[in-house]
Image (cartoon, rainbow, N blue to C red; front, side, top):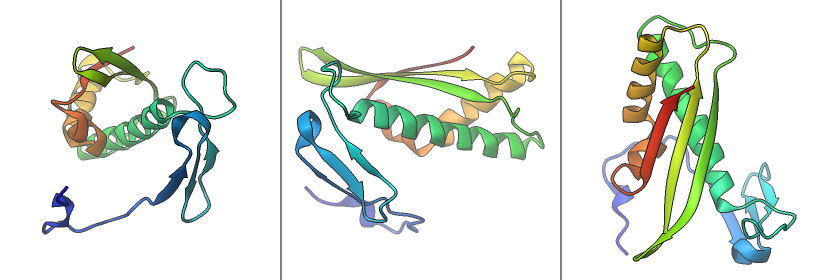
Length: 143
C-alpha cells in the first residue's frame, strides 16, 4: 500500500505504538511509555480495553478540542462542564465488519443555536471526523 501521508504536509505529532497479541489477548504500548494497556475482545469480560473504546476516547477528545477552537474564533469559551459521550459500535453487514459512531455533546449554558454551530464547525475540522466522513455512519447530537 502506498503511503499518501508523505505529501507536502507539516507533521505536528506522530503517535507511535507497538501492539502484539491482537484484540483477544494483546498489549499496546506507546514509544514514550505513557500508554501501556491490555487488550481484550469486546463483551468477552477480559481485563483489557478494546480498539472501539480507544477510538471513542480519541475521537471525543479531539472533537472537544475542535469545539474549543471554534469557540475561540467566535470569542467564546467552552463551558467548564462541556462533555462528550462517545459510542463506537463494531457492527457487521453484508460486506463484513464496520464501525459506526455517535457523539452526544453537552454544552450547558450555551444557546442551542450557538452550541449547534460549534458542533457543526468541529465536525468539519476535527481530524477524526474528517478521517471517517464517508466511511463510517455518524450521528452527532446535542444533549
